[in-house]
Structure formats: structure tokens, C-alpha cells
Length: 181
Length: 385
Image 1: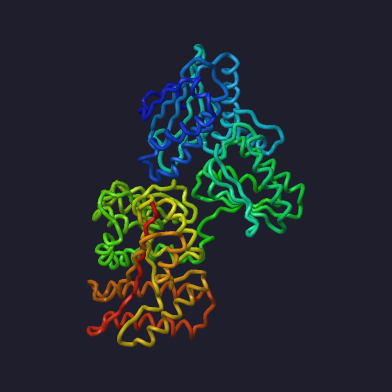
Image 2: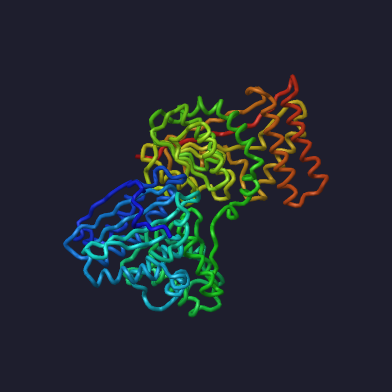
């Protein structure tokens, strides 16, 4: 299985650093930051507008998760890499142990074969879903490949690869949700 | 999070717009209130229009599912029809699952089926003729566009761009600083992108979008064009309002439309006249107005445009090669008599006479002493500053 963590061949497109405390001061920062990055990254896609809307949706879900699950002080770093038709989002998040566990569980659920069913069941259930529902949606609706790195430091690296436009991929494994890291 | 939700009593429709990405479910109190109000005032089918909701997160979606599920329990006899747009990429992925939530909830994607007659006109066989039409109208419009305010270096949007050939001509001739070309037909856009790629044109942004519910921001463009499109839409004012909205204050909107009953030819004028009068009736039966050209001034005034300029021009068999004109007429015959009249259920006798008028128009166009014309009206107006 191709791993996003060990693959350093993908060129970087945009990198953004956010002070974690400033970022988490206003919920609206999630949407504004997602919009900003999505617009910049969509300029050369076949339909820049449609692509920007989808990429912004993906980024928004991730930023909203990070908004709720990070520690301060620290820096949230978002790097966007372009892998042919696929886009890779790398988020570096300052975390404590409890937050690390949240990400590990959420990403593991998104990698399970029943991720799509779990997503639908959760959305149709009575209980308000926790923030990790975003991982399930990205896997179920966008075929996102989601991985974690940085297991030994207080910075967690969340890597998400999505293909939001039809066309050939530079490596075929990115077209389907990952089943293992 | 900035969303709006309002109930339109007249259409029994709740319209959602903007960005709905709440931090907590309690942020959707306004949706609860609006749905409760709508449930009290609706019977039969309640429409839930999400065409202009550009964003929705999972907390918001979960709450909507709860609200709609609750509505089905409260009013089991009521149908809920959710209307989404194919233009909003995430909408189908998220909302289609609602078809499984309750049999009384139906999700429908707003696409070309909602535009009466558009399917017929999007037939790929029509593409060559659209190119010929643009070639013939461009001879006139190239001279006219500066009179309507188009200058070099502007931010321009061509809404309902079709196969994109007009945008290419504008790009070459007027060198806009930005040129966005939008259409609701994926096939036409694919063709447009291919043509642009073949010609090495990279400056045009081809965008999939619904002209009646554009997701573009307000006040973006100096010059907005919409050619031969209002006439194929049963509520042209909806599109014109959107053109107005995306136009910058002080910018101008330019529209062109036809009046087919004024198509003419000599010789065989009478037969030609009869057929084009019937074309107008045929289009009306498909809820399209091919007579709308001269109505442009009124439409623009009603929306609030200033400094309205209007002129007409006649594309004729004398504009270049008469065979080009004849090819256009033949394509019209194929679509109007060969498809639309058949679809309407017209008799063989009617269709035969209907076809004859087109053939007589071709005869006039190719006759060494003949004259054949197709009139078009161009109207433009300024959005008040």
C-alpha cells in the first residue's frame, strides 16, 4: 500500500502558518481560511469554481476539527501539495495525549471498511456527532485517504489526500480510501 | 456562519442560502422556527430549496436531518421535496442519502430537466451550427460591443456561454483582464474547454453554473454578457437579476435575443413568414420565448438598469458565404420540425408545411437575386453606481 507519510516526492503548492490561539479565537476563521486556500489552489483546475467549492468543503471540515482539538500555545501549519489530479493536505497540529487519541480514533474509523455506513448511520442518528465525523465524511463521500504521523512528539501530522476532479492519478492507490497506514 | 432561510408562502418553499457551517446545532434555531412556520402553512408538498446554499458542515446537516425527520413525523401526509443544484459539488454527495431517510422525502437535482426545451437545444449535433451562428453574428457584434461599453482590460463574464466561441472571440478582440465563461451544460463546457485548449487559450475561466442561481459574488464584473439565452428560459427576469447582481456598480450588462417571427426572405416570403410565426408558437409551447428580442428594454428597466441602449441587426445571406446562412436554417428545420414539432405531436401535414417554410428560406438565401434575414436585438444597461 502506498503511504502518504513516506512519499516526499509531491511538490508543495501553498503553506500557511496560524497561531493556534489566534486561529481558535473565532469559528469564522475556519471558513475564511478554507476559502482562501481553496481559491488559491483551484486557479488551474478545469472548473476552478466547482473545484474551489469542493476543496473548501474538505479544508473546512479539517479546520473545524482542528479548531476543536488542539492545544495552545502552538502553531497550526497547513501545507497544500499537488499530486497530479489529487491534492494532499498536510496539517501540523499541536496536541496533548487526549487530543492525539481523538485523532487516532477518528482516523482509524475513517479507514474501516464500514466507514460509509457508519457515516450515514451517525448522520441519521439522534445523538449529535462528535467532531471526528468529518473524517468519516471525507472517506465516505470524497474517497479521501487519511493518515497520521508524528507519533512521538507533541506535534501531530494529519495527512489527507483527495481527488476532486476526474482524471488519471499519479499513483492509483489514492483513488480509493486507505484501509491501512 | 452566515446563512439565510426564508419561507415563501406563494411557492410553499423554504429557500436556504449562504454558508451554513454552525459550531453547534443551536445555531440553527432560525431553521427550526422557519420549518415549524412552514409546516403550519403548507399542504401537499413543501419544497426545500438548497440551490444557493454554498456550504454545509456535518453538524448542520445532522440538525437538518433531525428537523426534516421530525417534520415527517409531525405531518406524515406532507411530502418534502429537497431541491439541490448540480453546481454545488458537495450537495449531491450529502443530500442524496436523504432519499433513504423517509419515503416522504424526495431529493431532486436541479438540472437541465428544469429548463423546458433546453435538452433539445443541447444536442451535440447542434454544435457546428452554433459555431456558424456566432461567426455570422460576430461580424455585427464586434462593431457593436464598444457602443455598449466593452473596452480592453475589463473584467468580463459571459453567462450562458454555450460552446464558448463568443468568449474566445471577446478574448482575442478585447483582451479582458479577466474573462469568466459560465454555462449549465457540461457537454457544451467540455467542448468549449477543448476548443480553448486547441487554440492555446488559457486566459478564459470556464465554469459550470446555473445562470438563475449564480454562486458568483456580487459586484464582480465590468461587463456581463448573456446572448440568446434569456429567450430559452421561462423566467428570464431571474437570470437578469443575477446578471445585475454580479455586475459592478457602473458596469454594464449586455443581452441579445431574437424575434423569429420577423425572420424574412425573398422570394417565397409568404411561406417563410408562415413558418416563422409557427416557430414562435412552437417555442411558446415549450415555455420559451423566441420573440423576446424587443422586450429587452422593458426587462432591463424593470430590473433597475440605467442608460439602456438598444439596437437591432439583421444577419443575412449577404454576410459572407450564403451557404453558412443556409446551414443555419437547415439546422433550425432539423430541430424545430424534426424534433420539437414531433415531440409536440404535430400532424404530418403540419410538419410538411412547416418544413417547406425553412426550405423556402434556404432557397431565398441561395438564390442569386434572393435575400434572407434573421433579426437580433441587443440591449445593454448600466447598473447604477
